[in-house]
Image 1 (cartoon, rainbow, N blue to C red):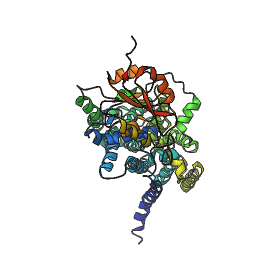
Image 2 (image 1 turned 30 degrees about the vertical axis):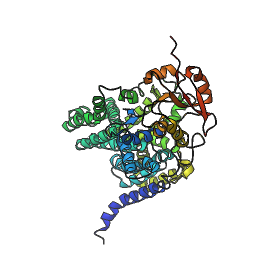
Image 3 (image 1 turned 180 degrees about the vertical axis):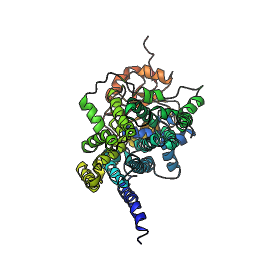
Image 4 (image 1 turned 120 degrees about the horizontal axis):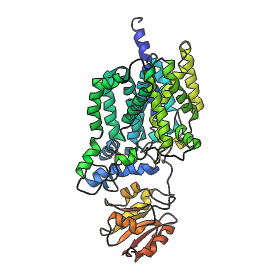
Length: 494
């Protein structure tokens, strides 16, 4: 027995971390397939996941029944395949997020081994701190793409930090870059750029010169292979639809324009809400840790992680486009590992650090949130009834020669475009009026003449009525929303 005890002791932190990880994750699996999807963007996932079969094409993502480059296909493929095998739509939409959430917890443990290599026990509190985040579980139990992005970004950061010290790990970074690009966006490439910029700025404090990174053959070979593969999907789509209508969305619009620096009107309060996301105990300690860890461990290469976090905050503050608090989930595991490193920094009191981490879990809200806290929609509906009950009758009324039009100017009464595509479009494109500019939107849509049918609020329809010929209305199940039909549209003013 004595000969085998040391091996078991070495494996104990891995077993403990895996056990806690699975127990916490299993808690949030309960009732995953019940209720309704709720979040506006979840309906995009619904539309794009069902779009493969609806449009008979698994090599393009369809949004509003037309090819789209707004998001890549990985999670949509996963949900679509689950539906093909008979899994209910709601469960099929949420289950990939939960699978990625488990992967994100595992990736957090890997990152802890990279950032705090002298203590395998750092894995457990790092995973616990991530699992304490309510925001993390809210998105893990939704049909959003964010936990998949967290999984691949965390693996990317782990591979990046490992490769900076041992270049043999660069191919692993390349793999995470390609997979991240297929899930949501090539975020690891952006993190690499921020890390390299930081190391260049701090070159005088590095033990190895910055030039060694660029001169490394494995590094250069990895990027030469991984970057083209990461952009292979959008390139394929551009080539496929080169001679058709323009694709909906592009990388420039989804990433570059969104994070293009500008004179932002985000004050400290708005920035704080974006970055902290209602979790000050966790995140503030994480930022302190990410700044201190390179010095506590005397590993200047870890300044790359500090730079990723610092420049990420600056980019969120200065972004010209809309940015959301959920984006900070991308760096949450790294912050929680850094917080653990800070708590473990006193070597003689290592177990005191474990106790402090457990105390932080308790103070921050615990691990097992109730269903009301994590629920993004299982028990809620936007308009008093599920969108399907409003839109399915509209789809049944829609005739082959009619153009479908939905009003979206009244944000309180609008239906998400993804829901309209799934339940009312009958597999056809439709016009979605975000402003009450009928002729402008119909001209952009390509409408010339013919009957129309749609859904608008009473106020929106009263604005559009002078331009609609032969207007007829019907009530819906929601007060203030009406179905309508028209035989045509008045000529546009000169």
